[in-house]
Image (tube, rainbow, N blue to C red):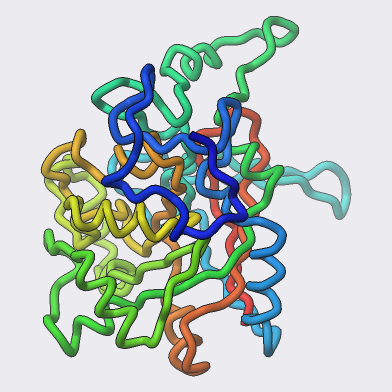
Amino acid sequence: MRLNPKGDRDSFPKRAQLPIVAGTPEGSAWFWGGSDELGRLNLLTPERVQKATRENVKTGCVVSLNLPLSEPSPPFFGRRPIEHKIKSIGKGAFDDETTINTQSSSQWDGFRHFADPKSGCFYNGIVSEEIEGDEGLDEGGPERSRRLGIDAWARHGIVGRGVLLDVYSWAQKESPYDPFTEHFITAEDLKACAESQGVTFQTGDIILIRTGWLEKYTTLTTEEKEDRSKWDVMKHQYAGLEASEDMKDFLHDSYFAAAATDNANLEAWPPKSFKASLHAALLPLWGMPIGELWDLEALSRKCRQEKRWTFLLTSSPANVPGGVGSPPNALAIF
């Protein structure tokens, strides 16, 4: 089955209606062609970009959604911290060199980041051997594989209608929670929050979800941040989206172009099962980009000030051939 990205979600198959296609993983929604590397970003058509710009850019105010590349500091989950060197290249002139792990700060998880644990396939049938084959290629030797690299997103660009669901603020009135506990944000929570904000979703929306993680993180002392950065990956407990069938139905059937959160993991951590996780559904099966550790604090305040929760969202991922992830370089424009 191949879909026309200009179509509306009402004409697209629901998750419960996904066809069984020989040679593809169960539950896969590879609708955009055998060589596709954009997944749900195909929904960001010129028509939708034009409409989102016309309807949402009114004041010209711009809000950055990116943490400093050095934050969180130290990085969580054993990631490498940023290395930044400034080099003099002559009197009054400088270059700088930066080394980062793209998972250590605000990020996009690209389609090379996570495979379907059941089949071993990445989005659109790419396998680990092709990605591992990038390692150790000598200059002048075989060309690096770029298939499914973040550079495909970079060449396309990411522009569309952004929608913020400030679940953390909404929950303070309904059922308060601590973002540094294993609290499950349900599909019903997202729908109720959207209703309270007067938000109606559209095909191709980029949904941003404020869990309160970043607000809580900023209250930690330097010692607490240092200590937490040394924890085993599975010791951490954080609020996030519930990896339930209802949540998967909601995220799939809404036909969002992408989803991003202010926490380090999108879904509640630790996951009950990597096979049943949202990462295992969104990235390899649906081709739906995941953003994590986005700075949604100023955005939340701006949306409340403007009394609207939609805006034009732009993102320009790094054009790294075969890249796994990237800082989002994301902006919200009002």
